[in-house]
Image (cartoon, rainbow over all chains, first blue to last red; front, side, top):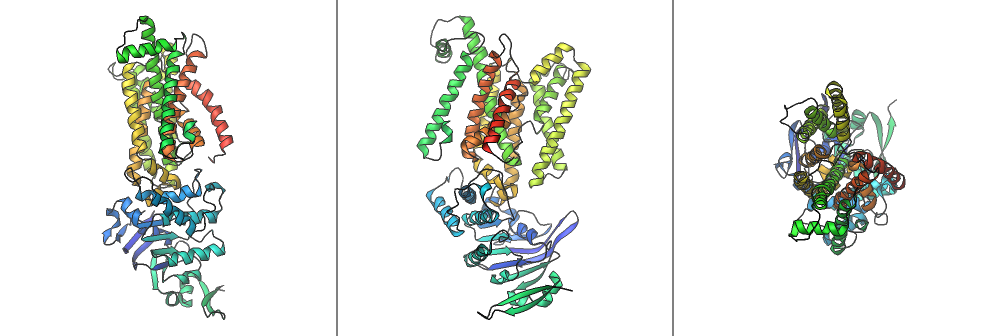
Length: 253
Length: 351
């Protein structure tokens, strides 16, 4: 599993992350929340091994990420960035096929197994019907679903998603969150919607580059903490239909 | 074009496409040898080849034999190697820099080669010990080194900003070296030298002989093979170098190997035949239009189309004005620019 130990990172003397220590539990879905600029994307990129930490280390099953070949890492860890774009005239299916890259080489060419993994990933995000459409003709939400399918086609143990629900309509937001939560893989998912974050097994709250809370939603997302971290007033309501709790926010006057 | 349909089917179709491409290349080479100021019949050409390669004993005019074997054949082969090498370099740079405008010239390589050439031939650098080609090669490598260092100093990392930095650095480098070239010519050249060097700068296959073939062909073949081994990595750059890294591509190593190969191919080709523009830019886009963006097909298609294109451009350069040879760079631009415009309009590719 992935462990982050005392991670720090800065860009041009601006500290983006300081001393973050975080261990993932196998199979869990961890929600990453925090205001804009709190370090969510930076932490995800460090966990994916795309950037080297300034101090501290990320370990994959005890081995420092920096010491592992990229290919080995990509067979275990998949990353969905925010709004990655291309000008190439690729079809949806071709984009998802990129997910097989870490498993292919000159000695392991494209096979039937790869084909069925790609089909499965497309079906999971409900994009089979649009698979032959060109990237440029697809909507933001459709592109996002293809990116998620591409990550699934990597067959990772660990899935890192940076605000994956950003461009999605509400039905697909719920579908993607449910999908990620139910996948048998360990996932870390950066989210803005704190009510949606409740689907996660645990929630990590980042504030000014520091990890300020980690635990189940009901313990972590308290009105006091939301006021301190996000600068909003929050009240907890209960849905009379099913007794589920949700947060209602107000600006602090 | 046959390559357009290959790959969607099985291996059989791919082999068929390769066969057709090789036949097309052979036909273009034959045309390059047959067509010229004095047209030589294809039969004579084949007999010369039989004499030279298989040791057949056809009786032929020694002059014809000399023109075919030493002049036209070498020219056509070097044209093919240059075309393939420059086109594949263009594909690589466009993919890795994620810039549809990238080609070997954007990196300032040809400008550096030109400066090296005039430094040797006109300013007399190396005191007669260096040839024009060697000077051009040194200039090309030097220019690319400076451009790469500048891009690095300007913060050209692995991200999208880094891709922009190297293009900007290339433009700055090209301006600098073109200015140096103009300075050397203005300072030292007499009018005959200036005319000669301008002709070389526009690209010329006139002086090409067998030793050039033995340099151009291995470089082109090795370059295309190295790139062909990295087609999946090139595909993975579609969403940028960070996305490639998250797909398991060792980004720095691949960038160094492939951009280095492209720079070397370009330096070798430019040092031999001068600055032939447009091949590295137009051919990759034309190939993409025909076979799609995936490099497994794009690389062989570009190599083949670049080779045929430059052979045909060389033929045109020899026959357009009777009794005079046009610089091949003029032909590639005259043919390439309208073709490129047509592809842009029809393809609707977002630049």
